[in-house]
Image (cartoon, rainbow, N blue to C red; front, side):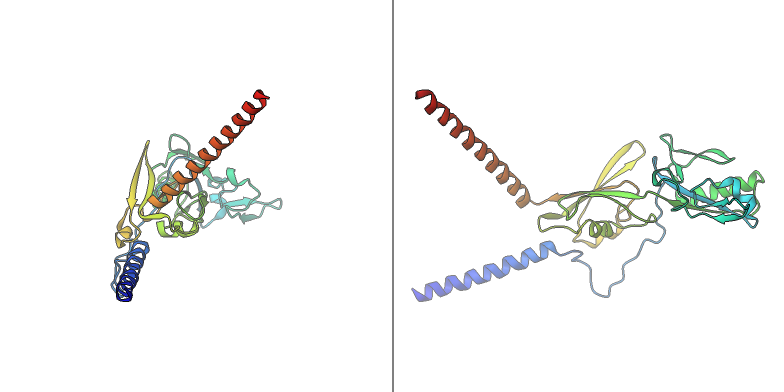
Length: 273
């Protein structure tokens, strides 16, 4: 009998160790990366301009006074004080409401730029828009050797699903990775599916979702590894999480049913009296 119990104890410990090891493998991030192995890094990533983006566009020249007409208040360009002095005005300051700073890309993908008029910017990168404005200023002989700087003022993404802290997050600049976004949102939970992390992205008038497995190094080569403006990250819950939700719903229904049954019983007793 003791020998039999000893065998069962050994088997139980072995199964527990095996299951623990398997569970650990399931929750490891980037588990197929090898130590000291070099992996290529995407260096030429650039965010693409979308509708409803707010852009800071600063034009400067050797003579700041000549660049003044091309810098709207709050754009991060220049202004003239009461004494006639030319001062630099960062886009984040200037006493202008946060939601009114910079150039808003309208529903048609255009902005109204001083003197140059309406420019179609949707689908361009920052460098492409920079070159467009610079070339146009030179072509029309409005400025000689202008310096143009373009930045995003409202780069944001949203995180939903089984994540530490759901919500919409704004970041400085326009370069953030999927891993960084997950970290900002409080990391994954023990009930997150590491192989079902989706990124929903807008392409013109359409949306598309791409699924990622955070346990694999292949995430680095995904076109969604670097986030774009207004991307939505959705983390799918595990079956255990779904089961927990089903149990919670069942408990709520049982509680309601019990309350209704109790109420009807009391009413029936009251009527009989």
